[in-house]
Image 1: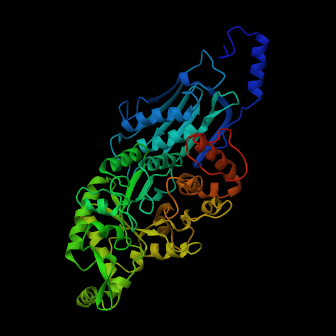
Image 2: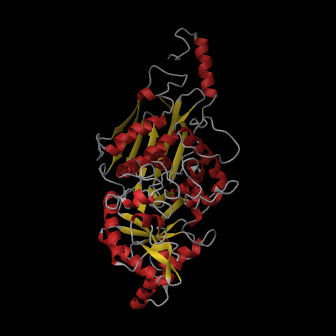
Length: 537
């Protein structure tokens, strides 16, 4: 054994002193993994890791082998995450002879070139022993989750040496749909900011990026079919847009991390920016018998509206590979429709009377039919259900009402009708308050509502929403992390094992420090420090 940086000729007693210090100072195990695995059995037995004798590889029985884009790129990525100091040469102790340590990955299905979907298994098992970590998974997506878990098991002593403890883990997600929403209309988020969010999502085992890409303020999506939508509707037609290349980059970055990209094109409301680049799409508002010059929601009475929507969604369906698409349908203000004589005449012709919810239902049913014809499953905000609209049974209803304490009633009411639901109401974390508000996000119980077991199975997951009125690239990360991490554990882990916020606190505090070291500007949970503070400023 030799000690790098201390000279080649050192006396034996000095070696012994260093050895005693290394045994007594800084040796510990990790606080735990975030989110907590379903079964996690750690041990005090400890193995030293040398980056120069550490390898990722494929098991002989693995359906995926070298050349698998998802895992090959993950091996490179996780080497740097496991050994964050190695490239910089930091770490005082180095040993000339170390037995190799291998992380051997075996997957049952070769889905290396595909995309994650709603049925993708994320189950994995991980056994860490002397010289070998054996990671087995049904799919490459489960292997990614296992690699993340392994990376969190590795720790350093005070001299910079790396260790991992003997560990046995069996793990799988509680819910299949675990999402983060970013709003890129109210403030444009640079592509690099989105990619960094995808990285942090992978560290937290989130698996769906809900891209609320357009809304009233701006239309940054650059459409091939309708280029005027962004050239006239974006904040700036050159600098504040997402090109087709940008979108492909986000989709690819997500795929390599096992993250689905779910686009939302919300209508008929929230569409003011659309009208700038698409004439006759929005409803002219009237003041008395004359147009006021203002415009309201999409005009649901014109055939041209549905021709445009069919063209737009045909493109969107070809650009975004996921089988789901979010159609919005929330917060439609009927004032403009009510003022327009052509709209009122259409309603009489259709037998809607003065019930404008029937007009919205008519519109949304047509839009859902368009996306169904494109083999896409629709997600809509719960307003669509509230207006008694006839939608396919496989449509997912997104619950955002009932904050803070009434969302259980919404869950009960909508699942009773046999509809699948996605819970967002308690996780609108764009709302901020002084103190540790992560605790309230952590204690959400998505299936704790009056209803049968069959109803509770209809809750397919949850979503953390970061609306963009007061958020852009300057403050997104500290506002999102680690507060969203509380929801990540609720959606992944067993509720009975993880409901105590006081037990969760030291693990989340430790995980927040890991995020900092990985370049994510996660805000503090409370008073304290991290051994490696954020280095990006």
